[in-house]
Image (tube, one colour):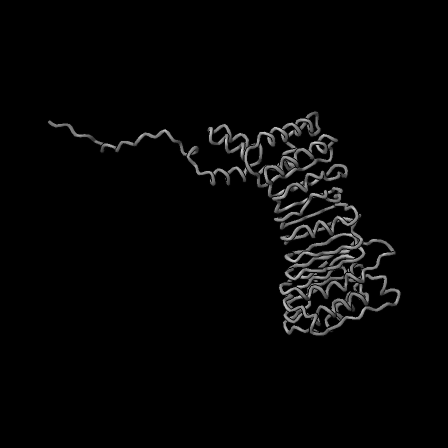
Length: 375
């Protein structure tokens, strides 16, 4: 009797010498490594020769706080080891670089600050696109090699002294995002730095003091402006494309006089895009008002905020300057939808009085609503 098989014959699987990991497209491996912590991305280099090449040309080098906390010796951050790791990775790197993030820890000594200059020089050679260097150690002077990074599109610096650019510096032709936190500027540096960025779209200035007495913003492509620091005057010379403005004035002392800051609001009317306006802090407490000098707002057609949709004003104390400012905004914002506000350091009775007076102000926009924010 003929025998029969109980199971059907399986088709033969063709043999292949190429594994799935090694055959991944470069775009895929690049996205995978971008999302991994740096230490894990380095370990991926053992998967294959191709992954080792990917690691040596890894475009996203993030030496952040978590990276520093992974390297301890005797309960402290091993700065010597960190310096060696960063130098080895950088100087073995092959190809262009997209992101360089360097967190300088509080325990840092002079080694990192000394190495920062050659690191920035190397980054300028490989055409780095984005640099973020938060400094939690002593105040450092940013090396002049930062000006050699001509391909930058984003730059964030925290707790540095920024000196005057070298004479050969021709500007950051591609820089679109500039964030400066706790930065001190040499005389005239801030204005020239902003002017050297013709493509600048986002500008953030926070907690800076030295070199910030008279802030001049001349950025024809600027879309978002945030200023939270101590300054005496703010001049917006050329911001026709700005969409969002946030201004918070920190107290500068008894001799401060910010009347130019209020005048700057009129310049915003030249923007055809302005949609969000936010004021915080001590901006409206003008010494010139206290001394009896009243500022007159002109409500003519030249100063219509024709695209402003939202306004946020916080820390209101009930001064006449604040009411003049809000009155001006309401009278010139023809499509305004909401004005958010809250009071500061007022008892319930005074706060209620201020709120009632604000609600009675005339509004150019029939849709405008005043919304009191909770403390």
